[in-house]
Image 1 (cartoon, rainbow, N blue to C red):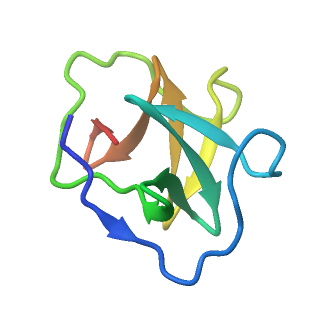
Image 2: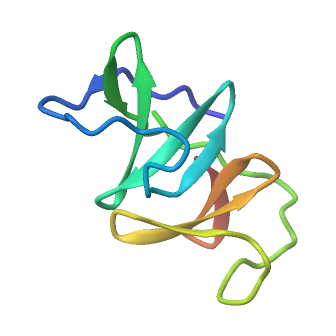
Length: 99
């Protein structure tokens, strides 16, 4: 999986955490929170945009995500990601990417 870049989300006063009202998404060693179509994570006293760097194809992914597939759907920018096995999958050019 591609490593996320460090991109501080400036002027973000909301504190994400249990009960904050945003969808929590497990991601590697932390939790992201869906907020305004992108993902935030608490990081060293501030909030980062948690976005993948690069393109990471999820090989051998036979499951087709979509409405009613049983996985949590997360609106993300101009598409929808699906939480599967502790990470996000996004459909991309005929295959699934790890986000």
